[in-house]
Image 1 (cartoon, protein in one colour):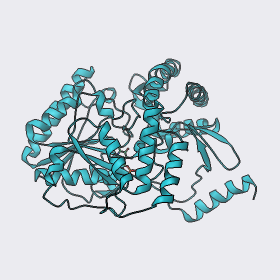
Image 2: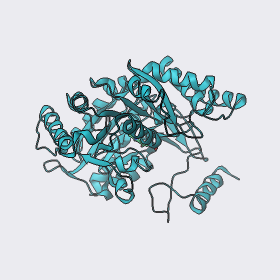
Image 3: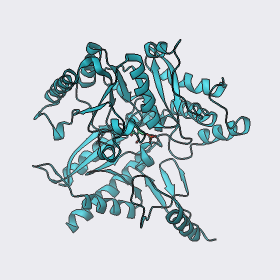
Image 4: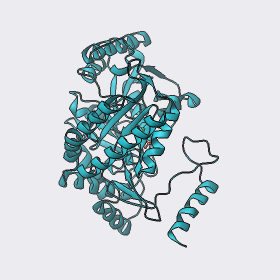
Length: 438
Ligand code: PLP
């Protein structure tokens, strides 16, 4: 088979046999990815693409980091799998690495298979710890595709799947499209907190087990919390005896230029959920980092939950190697520096030049570019415009990430200045092409 034949075969097999997430299945024409390195991926024929999606915003360490690949290979040669009710050195070391990066007061890690079941189990822990039922979360959120996590989710993916009970939604802060008629970040923060307290009181504070929030809502638009908001949510949780769960699945492990996104916002949660960046998805894994107090609830009481692959050794080995490489190679620092020095100024320049851009916001390697039909009214562009933009970007060799009317600029944390410059030139050309056609 020639390399081109391999690409054709990959597409044909995919079309015939693979059922895909979140899509109507007929007539799919998905890109073939055969290999990758750092921020670049390629097909069998060797056509290279700059990955400014990090796939699903999870490949924080870049593709094929040699230390992580080697750690998985080495562990596979020692012990490829083992049940959860065992003590395993690799698993213990992975948990220790994670606890070392969490704030004081966190005791243990419960490993899951990904982000959804991390949230699912965090919700369960909060309910059992408090003896209460209701979980509050925001309309602008995604928490995963399992029974409770998808109903905790606020966006459209919840609506066909609302079978879990005990979930109530509220609005978080989003100044650009304020639900609270706010005009400053301070106003937005204060009014969003007022709204949340009204929801708590109206639902009955004694019934509320947890508030579940993405520290920085990701797919919902990279909504950087305004000053005082997360600290204010913490204060409400303390006042009413509610567990605060911060979902760091997308924002955690380097994406914001910090190990955990919440570390920039003067707040400490009771439970932290993680997945994605902890090992960049080289092996599926997620988990819950559990505070001393909640962990102690289950000292003498059985935790009624578990997974065959909890703390899988291949996942654990990849977590150790990934965290060590991120630490030793300054990868989290690179995300922060490149956000401040390269991405922020370049996106500001694009926003000056292109009327399609209503706002850019973000930090580290976690940025949203909000596309509008009219800067005055802030009316979102039609879906077709985003489709056209993505086509123009792909044609120029960039893997884009889009959500609603936005392009998210979310490369791996290892991205270089040169790669950012190349990507910005592609965004610029794609915007120019779409503006010229419209
Ligand atoms: N939480 C957040 C904030 C996410 O972005 C995601 C996935 O995108 C999830 C949870 C679900 O993670 P997973 O797809 O690993 O189940």
